[in-house]
Length: 431
Image (cartoon, rainbow, N blue to C red; front, side, top):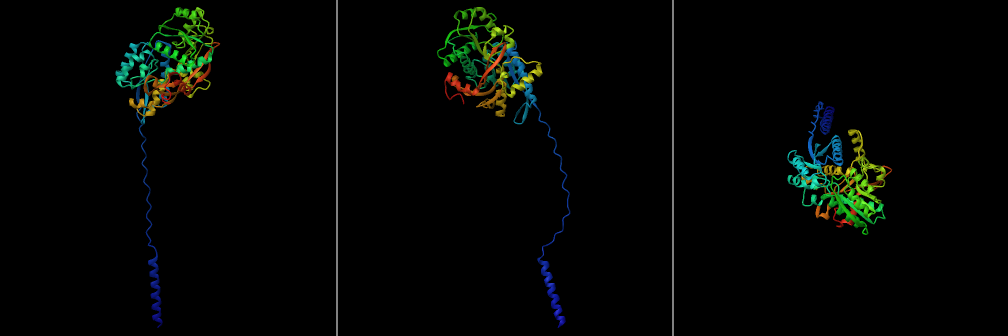
C-alpha cells in the first residue's frame, strides 16, 4: 500500500514538473554579436566649375563721366566676383565686362553693339548712355540680348521693344530735382533753360519745362537755348541770358563738371546776377579746373550718395574698394552704375539667364544700389505696360565755401508718388 502511494506521489510530481516546463517561455540562444560595418567615407564633391558670363558696355571713354563709369564698373564687378559671383540654378558665374569707346557718337555706339552681340557673344548689355543707345537698340533687340542703359529719350528705348530697361528714370530727376530746387528758391518766377543741341537735350528740356510748370504753374520760362555738345565758348548764349536777367538759369544739359564751369564763367562775364541750378551730380574736381570756387558759390544740384550722412553699405564698400584699386577717390556719378545692380538683381530673382525670364524678373523689383533704393516701374506715360524704368533716390545739396554740402534726400517712395502729379496716370505706374 505504501509502495502504491509512493508511485502516485512520484507521478504527481512528474506531472507538475512537466506542466511547469510547458508553461515557461521558450529560451533562444543569445546571438553572437556582430561588428557594425565600417562606414565608407563620403567622397569630397568636386567643386562646380565656375563659368564666365559676359556683360557688354559701350561708353564715351573720351570724356570724364564715361571713363569714370568704366573704372567704377571694373571695381564693382571685381568685388562682386570676389564675393561669390552670380549663382543661377546652382551654377556659379563670374562676370566679365567687355567695354568699347563710342565717343558719344551714334554710329560708333551701333558698331560697338554689333560687335558685342555677334562677335563677343555677350549675354547682356549692362551700360550705354544717351544718344548712342537709340542708334543701337535695334541691334541688341534683334539679337535677343537685353540692354540695360541710361537714356534720356526713354520713349525711343522702351516703347516697342521687349528686351530694354533702365535703372534710372529721367522723369524722377524732374520730379525730385526741380521740386527740390523750387522749394529751395521759393521766390523764383522766371527761368531760362539751357541744354545740349541733340535729341536728348531737346527731350530733356521739354520734360524740365513740363515739370517746372506742373509744380509751380506761375513760373514763366523766359528762354530756352541749345549748344553743341562739345562747345567750349558760351559767350553768345550768356549775353542773351544776361539781357533778360531771369531769376534762375537752369543748366539742364551739363554733367556737373567742366561744362557747368564754362556756363558759370560765361554768365559771370556777361553780368548775370541770378542763381544757377542743374540736376546732374556736382563734380567739384572737374568744375574747379574751369572756375574758382567763389564763382560756383551757391550752385545747387545733386550730390554723390557718399555725402549722405547715412550712406548704405554698398556705398561704403564701393568707396573703400575704389580707393584700394586706384589709390584715390574721385567725383563719380553713381547714376550710371544702377544698370548693373538692376540686371544682376533681376537675374537672381528669376534664377535664370533666359532673356524672357530676366525681363520678367523686373516686375515689382525693389533693390538697393549706390544711389539707394530703386523701384522698377511701368511707363503708362509712354504707353508701355511692363516694368522697364527705375525710380531712384536723389541726394541734393549746394556748393558752399568751395565744398559740397549735402542738404536732403528725396526718397524713392516720394518720387513714385510724385510721378502722377507731373505726368498723370494715377495708379498705373506699377505701385
